Length: 96
Image 1 (spheres, helix red, strand yellow):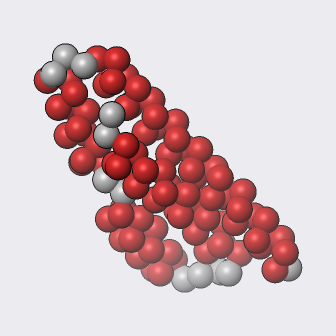
Image 2 (cartoon, helix red, strand yellow; image 1 turned 60 degrees about the horizontal axis):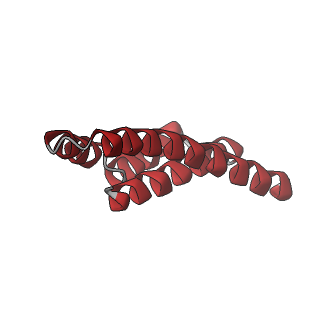
Image 3 (cartoon, helix red, strand yellow; image 1 turned 120 degrees about the vertical axis):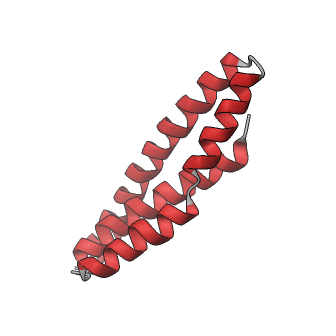
């Protein structure tokens, strides 16, 4: 199971969720938001590595790991975004 790529994807998703809330709360310029969200988080996370590692698992007929890898990356990354948004909302509530 390629856990390194999974960890990077979940961390990047958390950062993106957190940033999305903070950018709105701080009224950040949309150009800067785009730079950070797409530039930093997009470069940090590793969709192409996830696809390659999943393909390699498929080539090795490791279909249970293929399924687990897909579910873990999608599910935990979504959880990371939600967690980041919750942390961001908590932080902004304390700032106001």
